[in-house]
Length: 318
Image 1 (cartoon, rainbow, N blue to C red):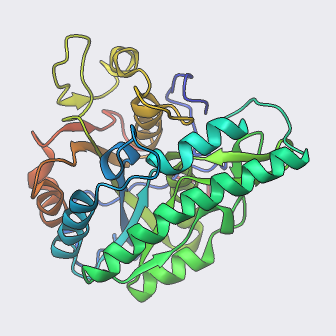
Image 2 (image 1 turned 180 degrees about the vertical axis):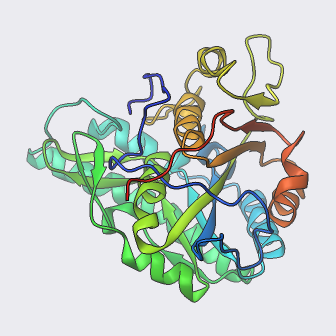
């Protein structure tokens, strides 16, 4: 789905599948399996505006990144966890210069200049990725790099690919896969941006075929959550107010080729329709991420914006 489109109750995940119902209880740091015996995974996204200074090219917020890595280490104790991150001041400026966009649309990139633009964008994104993986490892997290370009291709911005066995096996082993906003090969356009949100949605649709479900997603940025038109926090988003929340969310104030908060909320709402709740929180608040990982049910209310469908989650076709 493009960032500007609106979700509805019939939306499916990016590859056409809907993840099955997920277990809403338990602790993110302990092994968690539903009644079917499936492994349940929590997704955590570190927003690009949170971990980089978007006003300065290739500038990492080192102190904040170190703290967040330490909170992940403290809040996680061996359960199924997958971390993703945005590209911030690393990949977004390069992507804009190269004419790379996320979602549908955009010209085919096949000139020599286009190819160098693709290479520069991915190199910039990977430079940040290496720093984040290293920070997690230094904090004691068994991080395992899994960029989307290694497990999917796109077609006019929509991701396709077989079930991502490397990701699934890493989760079963107790590793923490780390993915990112990336440049993927695109069948119709040559290459396209695959945002972390798009990657998360693809994984939520593809992992169930390998016996793993996504139960919740935690999104960290530089605002308390989704704000209304008056700048007030929207504590909960469901079918009664999702359209108003999307209208208020808008895009990103900085250079962002993926759509900012609106894209995040669209993805969260699509996941909510499949029974995957999302919590959008302020990553600048010390201790909040650790608390949410340790006590997901207790910490959900009042921590930020909770996105949860008020309908029964749909099941995957058998």
